[in-house]
Image (cartoon, rainbow, N blue to C red; front, side):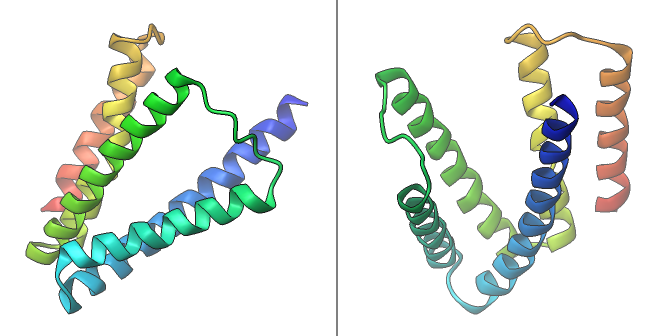
Length: 141
C-alpha cells in the first residue's frame, strides 16, 4: 500500500510542479498586460472557484473545526501575500529570478519543520538545503 501512496505523492508532486511553473509564466505575461494587483486577484479568484467546484463534485467533508478553519485561513493569508508579492516581482523583474526565489518556499518549510515541528535534522537534509541555495544563486545570476 505504501508503494501506491508514494506513487500518488510523486504524481501529484509532478502535477504541482508543472502547473505552478505554467502559472508563473502566465502570471508574468498577465502582470505585463494589466496591473499586477488585478492579475493577482483574477488568478486567485479563478483558483478559488476551481477549489470550491472541486469540493462540490467530490466527497470532501465540509465540516470545519475552529483550529482547522483558523489554520486554513492563515495559510490563505500567507498564500495571498506570496501571490501578490510574486505578481509585483514579475512586473518589475525577471521571471527566472522571481520564480526561482519563490520556489525556495520548500526550504522555509523544511527549516520550520526541523526547528519548530521536531522533524529530524540530518546531514542529508542540510546538504539538500545548501544545494538548493547554491542552485538558486546560479540560476538567478
